[in-house]
Structures are given as C-alpha cells and as structure tokens.
Image 1 (cartoon, rainbow, N blue to C red):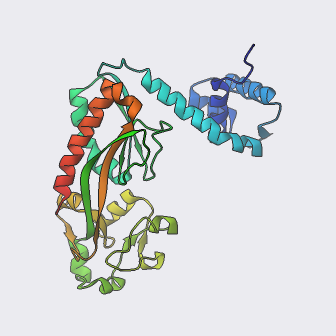
Image 2 (cartoon, rainbow, N blue to C red):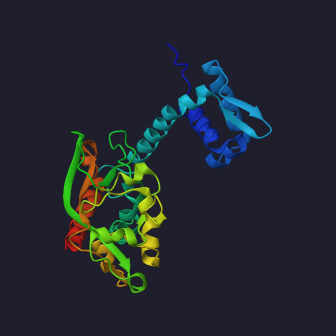
Image 3 (tube, rainbow, N blue to C red):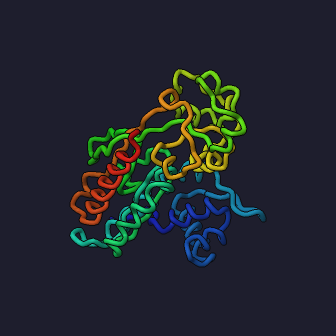
Length: 300
C-alpha cells in the first residue's frame, strides 16, 4: 500500500513560510529557491485538500487551519533536528553535536568558559546552546542536555544534582553612594528596585523576606534576566544577583544579606537513551563537574 501522506520537506517549507510570512522569506531561511518552496506549499495544500495561506500583495497570511498545524510541524522540526544530531557522530566517538539548554544567566555568564574548556579537549564535538528560562522538554528532544534550576520529574531522564546557587539583593556602589543603604526590608520601598514587567514573570520570584512583590514596586522593569543584570551593573537600581557572579564584579555590593535572598538547586539532566552516546556522556559529566564547582563558589 502506497503512503500518500505529505513528506517532512513539505512541512519544513510550510513552517518556514509561516515564520517568514512569504515564499521568498521561507526560501531564504531554508536556502532553497522560491519556486521550490512554492511547489512544496502547493503540494501540501493539494495533499490536505485545503488552502493554508491567504495570498495578498503583503505576503502570505496563514489560515486558522495552518495555525493549528504549526505546533505539530514544530514538533516534527525538533524531531528532525534531534535525528540529525543523533546521526552526526558514531556512538562511541567524541564527535558530532550536543544541544544544551540553560537559563539566560547560566548560559551567558557561567557556561561560556565551561564550554570553552570542553571544546579544547573535544574539538570535534559541535555545541548548540539554547537560552531559555522555561523547562524545555527533554522527552521531546528539544535539547539533549538541560541545566535546570528545578528537579526534573520525568522518570525517563538521567539527572544529577550539582548543588545550590545563592542569590541575594545587590547594588552598584555608586548607587549606594547616591541613595544610601537600606537598613531593613521595609526601607526598600524608598529605593529604586529592578524587577519584572509581566505578572507571570513576577510570580517566578518568591516573596523575599516576607516582602510582597508587585509590578509597582519596580522602578526598572525587564523580563530578561540578562537585561536586569546589565541594569544592575550599570547602577540603575537594586536587584537580585547570584553571589558567585557578584564576586566577579567588585562594584556590586550585597544589600541586606541574610534578609533578602534565596537559593536555587542546580540539576543536569538528559534522556536515558543518550547514555550510550560517548559525546553525550562526556558533555554530561563535564557539565556536572563544572557546575558542581560553580555551586561551591556560589555558596556563601
């Protein structure tokens, strides 16, 4: 019996056109010609028996059905990428690709030298790094290895706890010279505080020392941890910072230590099926060793 279901290349072009809004944009994204992408869209629409885009001079607008197909096409895309990574190196060789996901702060401030040391030892292993504060699903192979601030719950994962990271309120010394040092948690309402913009982001933080958090409290609002850290180093306001990172920037001073602080666990996780891959084991063990050392540095 002949399988007439659309092939992945059709959905790949479909996803590119949805993302770029035009055949030409989708073609550039994929490195294909515009007529080729156009033929893929026509073939997919013919196979499904319905139009997927509304065509106009402004480009292509996806129909409601097309938007409903996007999550499934994205799942196919992630599966195809995982398949490509799995096929990129022999199981017992230190070559191929490893895809890592980590939070913004860990990915930008902590991992670069750690990954540089790994690359020096294993130059044939390519590294892909995804910066995200959400917990990417390793079960679906969004990434091979994850560094998470919460304990993984899926039973099919191999996970190792590396320790805890302490975070506390900090400020640039110049800001403290201008505004003074708060003497209690209640004093914080009189000082410029760095925090989040959206309520969903604010809920990521716990109440600090029993101090209620709200959007109105923050004089500088940014939902990016990297953006907040840049503002903290620039002296925009008082903000939370990992103690270990603050030690690397002598101008950052702890504020109300012991009163406004919390800890985050650090876990390294990967799917148990990847244990047979040498490059995955090498990276997993390297990250676990290095992050364990970092958490010791982060301990106050």
